[in-house]
Length: 237
Image (tube, rainbow, N blue to C red):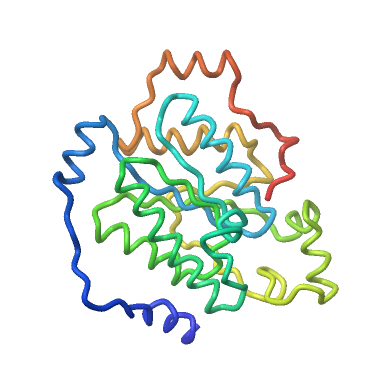
């Protein structure tokens, strides 16, 4: 982990730059737009259900006209992080970049929903510290599932390939996953439906005063479409 931590801190190569503040503060932006941003950081093994849950949450919030945007681990590697592999150092840089991007989304008053394995606790803690230093709420959501269940799901066939030695540095098999010790929200995705998982997250945000959902609007969304999730969607990524 020493090399990983070094990779996180050895990034200040820009010189002759200065921070340029805008014409209003985040508080003023929040007041004008009538909303506050935050980051929901989903973490868990491959096939733990974090992406399924994150997608359902995004759909639910946007259906309620709440600004939310999902940053998915695979999707990000098609563009922003396409130059990164899966070594420990590259995994750390992957999460460092996403921590910064999520903070920008949240700073703009959007609810950033990140769905990344993010296997190293130190990297997740760095993303949290980045948000906390800026006064932006950071909520860790642990999509927890026994690895045996994740392997049974294996929608992409990755565990099988890892067991056969065809994939190196695969989290849970040949590379470690450091589970959260104090995640704000802990969901056993093999025991809880996607819809109930979304309800649990929304209830937590409401309880903490981070989200206000209009009861009538919420009821309307449920009647029209519901949260598009059920136990069958445990194809779970």
